[in-house]
Amino acid sequence: MFKKFYNLSINTMYPDEFTCNFCGDEIFADDKNATCDKCKSTLPFCSGNICKTCGDVIENEARYCESCKYETRFFKFNRSAFLYDDKIANAIRQFKFDNAKYWYSCFASFLFDVYKKYNYNCDIICYVPMHQKRQKQRGYNQSELIATRLGELLNIKVSYENLVKIKDTKNQVDLNFKQRKENLCDAFFVIDKSEFKNKNVLLVDDVYTTGSTLNNCALKLKKAGAKEVYCLTVAHAHQKH
Ligand SMILES: [Zn+2]
Ligand SMILES: [Zn+2]
Image (cartoon, rainbow, N blue to C red; front, top):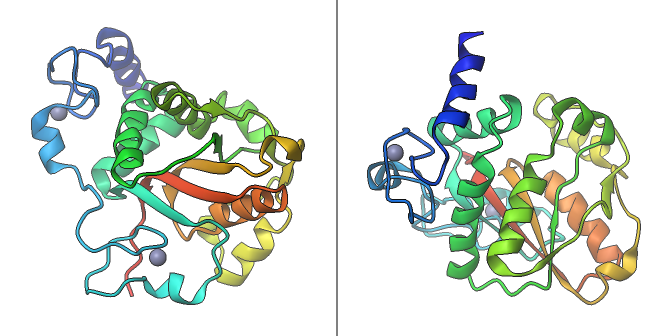
């Protein structure tokens, strides 16, 4: 109960343009990331040597991480703004489960920076959809909110309700590798293929875990005629090998 009230009051008392999303400290009104300098200096940005495909941080000098070496990826590459540490996980949890919608703008601003850094050049933005039933329960799709803001920042059209999730899948976290693949098989569907035909599609999601979800969406987008699919995610759950 207290937690709910706390989040609600943060939400209404501190509009995100004047306070740091992470610590609540006052910031300059024009800070585009809605994050104070102190928090920025401690955020776990994905930097150093990263996997050329999935963007995960690699401890050695390899070009690809162990999973991308063996997996077929239907997307060209993914880049994430952050590693999924406690601070980021907490923010994403609030965003998804505590109705803390205000995070969308902060996250989109960091994804905008990543988009520019890696010279993405996309024609249309798409987001990982939720099953209708789940979205009704939550009231919103967090990835759709980020995609919408990113579309405004980049001035790129966002595709809505075209890539859809038709199977109410089990939570991927509880499944092993083989089960994950079966779980997602035919979970996604493109209604109007012409929207993606010959386009470079930017696919947005909140967390990159194993890449299975993004891979399945990318496959459907490629089958719909997309030229390439490029993924962009807020956080990367680092895979230790
Ligand atoms: Zn801060
Ligand atoms: Zn990788």
